[in-house]
Each structure stands twice: as C-alpha cells, then as structure tokens.
Image (cartoon, rainbow, N blue to C red; front, side, top):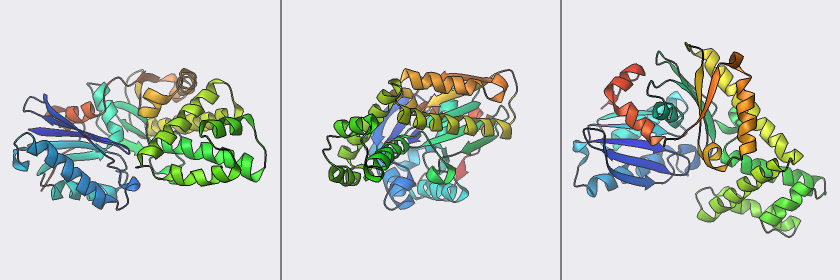
Amino acid sequence: MYIAIDGGGTKTEYLLLDKHFQVVDHYLGGCLNHDLLGNGWADVSLALKASIDVLLERNGLTVSDIEAVAAGISGLDTARDQQQADTCFSSAGISRFLAINDGYLPIAAENPAAWGVSLNCGTGMCCAAIDSSGNRIKLAGMDEWSGDAGGGNWIVMQMYRKVYENLILKDVSTPFVMEYMKVMNLGSKVDFINSWSDLKDGENTECKVLHRKIIRLFFELLERSNPEAQALADQMIKCAAYSIDAAVRELHFWGEKIPVYLSGSILTKAASSGYLSMLKEALSCICQGKLEVHMCTKRPVEGAVQLMKFPVVENFNLSYNSI
C-alpha cells in the first residue's frame, strides 16, 4: 500500500493507494504548513501522524503495510525544513518516503513527462520548476522575505492595508474604502481597526469566511477597473513573471515551448477572467515567448501519486529517504 499527500496551508489531502496505485481511501486533514501552525514542525508531525493513523485504522492496516509515501508540503522551503519534514515522516513510522515542496505536484499531475513550471497561488504563493533532466528549483514561498505577491493571505493583507492608508492615515473615503467597509459590514474607523483581530487567525472558520469575502471583493473591483485593485494586480503579475523568468534561466529546458501550469485556489477558483487574461498576456512576453500557459485541471495530490511510481521518481533525480 502507498500514501500520496498534498499538504497545504489550509487543508491536506491524503490518498491511500493499492499496489496498482488505485485509490482505496481518501482523507481530508488540516493545515500542514509549519509557518502557519503555532508550534511549527512539531504540529506538522502531530497532524501528519494523526491523519495517517486514521487511514490505517479504518482500513485495518498498520504502518508496516505502507510501502512508501510521497508528499508535497507547503512551507518546505529550506534545507532545515527538509530535515524537519524528514523527521516528521520518520516519527510517524514511515520507512520509505519522498517529501518535497507542494509546488512541484502540479507539474507531475499535469505533465506525464514531469517537467515544466508551476505558478502556485493558494494561501501563499510559490514558483517551482523541473527541467527535462530532472533538475528542480523552487522560488518564493517566504512571504515578505521573498517579496511574494498573489497568495490569498497576501491579497487580504494588502486590501486591509489599502483601506488603512486611506481611511486611517489620510482620512479619506474612496470608492475602494466604501466597498470594503460595506462588504465587511463595518460602520466606523474603530470597527475597521478592531476587525484586524478577526482577520489574523487563519485557522479559525469565521476568519476563513472573511478572507474569502475580501478576495472576492478584490477581483470584483479589478473587473470594474478600480485603480487600487489594479495596482495590486500589477504587483501580483510582476512577482509571477519575475519568478518564472528566474526559474527558467536557472534550469535547462529543451524544445520550443515551456509549459507553465497555473495552480492553487486563487488562480483556479477565485481569480476573475480579466485577471487571468492579464497574467497570461504578461507571461507570454517573457522568456522570448517560449512559455505555454495552462490552467491546471487535476488535483495536486495526483502529482504525488505520479511521484510514487518508481520510473517517475528516477526521472526526477529524486530518491526516497529511508530510516
């Protein structure tokens, strides 16, 4: 038996697979990003083991029945993160595993040849790339430290900041401010300031609802050509273009076109058609027009399934860790 995992900043998808890599069971767990959990990797370890135990117990299995696990994990950005992630799987009793950043999963899910570039905008954002020789690189994903722009948390924070700059610092109520206050049901400056407490707790259900409202408002304002929303969109597109261009320059791609896969809830669910058109147009102008942009149609966890298969793992120049 095998387990494939797509560990995100909001939810985590687990698939239990038989020896033919067919799905036997499915489980949806919570956040697996150490940056968003109170106790960091310690909480990741607890959540990972608890979720795997659920799959095992309800299928009458023990951890010794698991041949291997492949996992993409949000927030796995550095060598230290890699060590921590490996420890999490070892602590769960998994003897053979592959743990990489979740940004690589869409590439493996969408392309049988397992190469290309992934622009992933979900709770956060990152850019991951794998060339045809299996070399890989992951950029962004470190929030303010790497100048990330385009994830859900970033959009919410920037929308709040725009209102703060106008309403609190300048004491003006622009159409942008009025729309925000209306959608968030805020009647005064005091209400606005106090609402910050409700927006910070990303694991709270009510907070998630508020985030979705703000993200939806952002794209609605963008479709109405609101200048403040457009300024944020420009920043998001610039970040995406620079990241992809840097990834392509670092690796070695052969052929006329390099596939770029747009993934994550912001791009595949929340984004307006206008924003996607602007993004695709901007990307078409970089890398001498060699990029071929695709919207992801498969779940990232399917990429983990592909990585599980030995020939694919060989092509990626990746190897399973063993304890």
